[in-house]
Length: 442
Image (cartoon, rainbow, N blue to C red; front, top):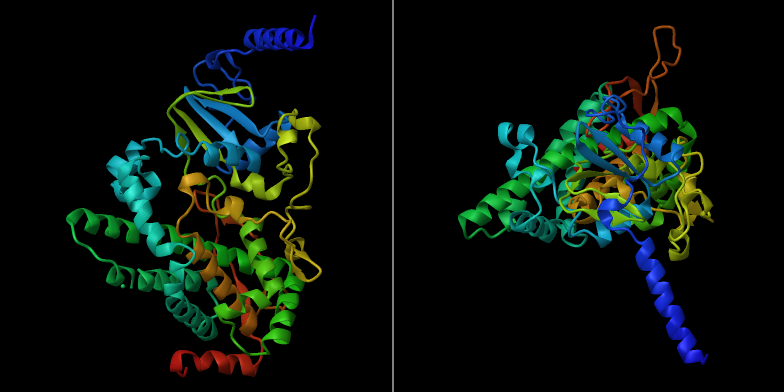
């Protein structure tokens, strides 16, 4: 038999075998998951709160970065790795960017104006474009003056009343976002009633999403300083060495403060503010790594799992291999530990370490469009506080340190519950720097 004939024969045979082995999508198995009961499925298995922990445990139990559960007939697919997130939410974003209709939220509570709950379509695209035009990585710089003003007011509030830091965070983030929006509405040209509605909705969405999440991030920052005081000392040593003691940072200083930058990244990673965020929805049946994703499935990206566990290198060859045989590397060794140095190498940010932003702000086309403003605001507030204040545990009447519970509200947004701590100026020099902010004396 000649070589060309042999090659043709082998190709035909391989095609025949592949066709016999390949199953239609409706015959493929579902992703692994806990055993389902008749009618109710896994309803009794899914906890009422902190569901992301249960999902992650099942992912480990079944050695899979995608799992399936059923809640009284509702199909839920949970995505647990960066690779799966990129494949489904990014590469297949045209079918994984929808939202499930929520009558209680949209119809009864009237949240149909919110981009977060809008179905994927032309109306959503119009809102997304409007938001992107004003809050992309370049355009967001127009709000820096509002961010500086809010940060300065936060420092002044902490100096006057250091008791309830969480309340100050929320109040100052409200102020910042409201001022940035008094400015956005001024800059935007509105020519039609439809444009007016879109701008109004975008402004409300930025405030509703941004103020709460940014305040929560600052609350977790304080928790981290209380639990890991050595990281506060290292960050303040860097600030004093580079900027000088009592000198307030500006946005121009971001590139020369690598330890502070690493600390901010670790704040966003350590306690994930939106562990699973708003669920995606896939209307059409799909297939992923030999598993069937049923039509009309809720698809969740487990951001908490991605930021607290091992991840897999993105080499395409490894994606063809069973999960348990892949070469696993630690993205975040000891993930429950607050350790900014995980992002550093030789005193500089290490680009080889996965940036928490891959999961912090959502996924695919539904990623938070206000993320650039949020990260800038968090950076400036944290850096300014570190430059001027010392955060320590509160003391009781006997002078003994009071250990916080580190408890938090576990909802769509995870934020620290009210707690007590000591926030004192680092020196008379830093107190004076705060008093002279914005041309005011206090």
